[in-house]
Length: 139
Image (cartoon, rainbow, N blue to C red; front, side, top):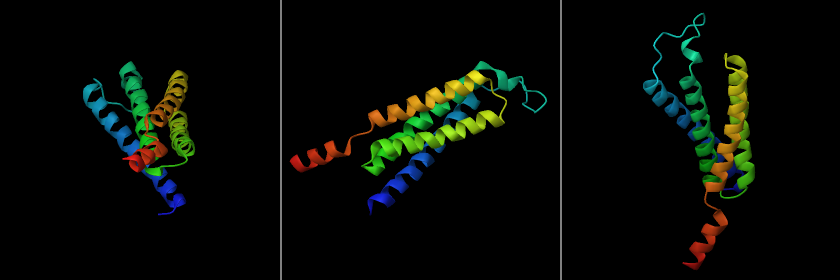
């Protein structure tokens, strides 16, 4: 497989894994932190609880971490570029979500910081392909 196709597949795979993780965190948090009232556009009280904000931030943290990690593992090269593209796409989605949804400004700022931190953590924790190749060649 050519390097370009591998990188594109790694980016798409990283975004898919991040999206699945984001959905799982949202689902788990909605089961744990069930609001007492039904959320409607006129009644935004349940959406304004701190537990809702925490679940949003946790979702972005885990999604950016596992998305970047998965993309880097599959790409095997251009680790920084792959992580930046995946993190950048998650940033665009988060900012769009914050503009469309009625979230406070501090949640938007915290989401940006958390997505950058999660992407960087995924980059740092992902195994280095050149180190793996040296171990395989030596072993």
